[in-house]
Image (cartoon, rainbow, N blue to C red; front, side, top):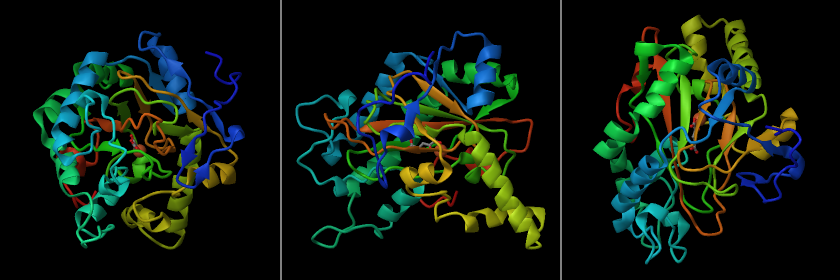
Length: 336
Ligand SMILES: O=C(O)CCC(=O)C(=O)O
Ligand SMILES: [Fe+2]
């Protein structure tokens, strides 16, 4: 598909540090799960990601979306008269009472009450945050959606890991409510660093996401830059006399708190002279990305107030050392 020749989208795209300029934006290249495997692998190697259109049956994704918002409805997050599957935010509410879970650290902060408080001094988020956490342990999510055979079998075949393919249980359901902060610039190996750098992330939007609806964005050739940054951190740590293991633990000292390379994609993209690749997503799409692929998210500016829901499912070759801290269902303050 002629992604390079397509003009940049004209929809304004907001990130944590402002509006991306048209020259900073390109399109993600879509692939079909039915394309020859060798071609798909080649693309993944070259681009650092693979956007698979319609890998999951749309109905299964919408069923999970429906279950999620039915669970969260008692918090008052949904616009009255709309159906849970639509996931429409009630625009009369204060967005700060419905903090999107853009990263686990953000969420932990809200949970501990260290985030903002309301007029009565109570931590914001209350029931909404509790229910959003509860969702991670619900059977429709952890036993069905996360273990969807269409995704598992594709990853097993694509990677060649076969029966050793293991989906890590820990995952984060990210509910980006309109206008709230988005996840900053990062690559995933930072969070999986107690294992080899061979894992694969499947980012799964749970519902349609409009171009400005807060979807994931990928830095062009970001996997190459991510690898360079990692090497640079490592070399620097070794030069200061740290052992291999100590060097690994020292990585976080080189990052912002929470393991991010930067809070703002705009400035980071400018500093590295690279574009951010965007797309609109449809329920059923999945993006596979490497542990060094640099990505972030736009701020959800959906004009209909559609809440962006997505999850990141991680896969490893269980015959190799992997980060076993990811074997348990996500809980607040699990320290990962
Ligand atoms: O959904 C998000 O906002 C972040 C997801 C992510 O970073 C990932 O899938 O690795
Ligand atoms: Fe990520």
